[in-house]
Amino acid sequence: ISKTCLITFFEEKNLQGRCYNCNSDCADLHTYFSRCNSIQVESGMWVIYERPNYKGFQYILSPGEYYPNYQGWNGFNDTIRSCRLIRYPSSRHRIRIYERPDFGGQMIEFSEDLPNLLDRWRYRDIHSAHVQDGVWVFYEHPNYRGRQYLLEKGEYRRHSEWGALHPSVGSIRRVADY
Image 1 (cartoon, helix red, strand yellow):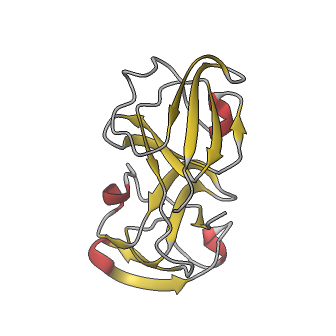
Image 2 (cartoon, helix red, strand yellow):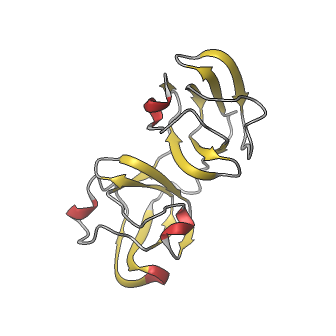
């Protein structure tokens, strides 16, 4: 990404209170702010995490967006402890999902967004995935709702490898460069 990317975290709602500007990955934000109640994404696409070292609940934030409170990014509370810039390895998108762990059972490959996975896949669960091109987000519920999980290019042999506690996926979306 050639331009400088910037995200600003605010301790209070509506971009108020103490703030911290961040322009790169940060594994531990706790020294910069104690809580996060609003965010301004100037540029770049970001994933923020509830725990340090890119762990816990994940939230994908779009460039140019303003999030007035933690409910705006579907957060469960005001705790944000790490963030990463999402890089775009490809303008193409292709993913394979599997019925069982270690790429077992039924498989389907696709390259478009799926607002309701059950429209194309007869299973509610995805136990493994292979991202062949692009960056993808799995959502817990249909229509891009619920917990979010970022999947970058590579192999995910079980749902825990993309950070999920269970394999339930309701919708899938490509991450496109804005």
